[in-house]
Length: 265
Ligand SMILES: NC(=O)c1ccc[n+]([C@@H]2O[C@H](COP(=O)([O-])OP(=O)(O)OC[C@H]3O[C@@H](n4cnc5c(N)ncnc54)[C@H](OP(=O)(O)O)[C@@H]3O)[C@@H](O)[C@H]2O)c1
Image (cartoon, rainbow, N blue to C red):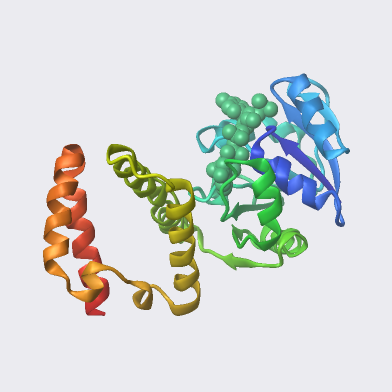
């Protein structure tokens, strides 16, 4: 089957690199810039680079891989260039495939295939994607093919209802993006107090916590002053947090409340 790509994004590049080695071939790669489409095709070693204004008809599979805010308008502009047998997907964690409004009436498969992975670095994402768990959703035809697509990448996925997508994505934001925010504050403390070794110490601490969460579960992974009931430490560190980060002063006590709830459970 052919995979056509709309938008030369980081996610589509990594997904196509893997899928081009499996049962799929890369068809059209559509970009606002023909040069970017050509560069994308060179990286994969397959595909036909074009821009939106050229003549084309997309069949089999279409990945609309553009920022969430423009998926709907890109889809509207492409509709007349989709063949009757097409299956159309996006990679957003937040949006459901309901955004492909009239796909059902037209008999198209539709779905969302969300990789639970950060694509900040393409090489790292390429290494990790074969272990990635995908969140997939769609109409019957789209979901059926989405399963076959993710089977070929990692064989690891969860199926989500359209109603649960925002909660599903918020959970990813809390666990992944908020973690980056917390690491940023930790780094500021290292910088403020001239402590060396942030890059070695904090990421490996975060990895050990992740490992514990995956093997023991969240509740059994809590360590530190709250878990031990060292309330003097909690209070003293709260004062330092307020001094160092006056703008975020409520964050510390709110997080302590969350940790107390975990301890009680
Ligand atoms: N980044 C992540 O870690 C991550 C993780 C999971 C899921 N996702 C999802 O994957 C999708 C793509 O994200 P990404 O981070 O890979 O995107 P990205 O690398 O920022 O690329 C988005 C692509 O969309 C095209 N584009 C940008 N603005 C556009 C506009 N106004 N109109 C039309 N096309 C436009 C560009 O391609 P051309 O210049 O070739 O047109 C650009 O390369 C999103 O739905 C996102 O939610 C991302």
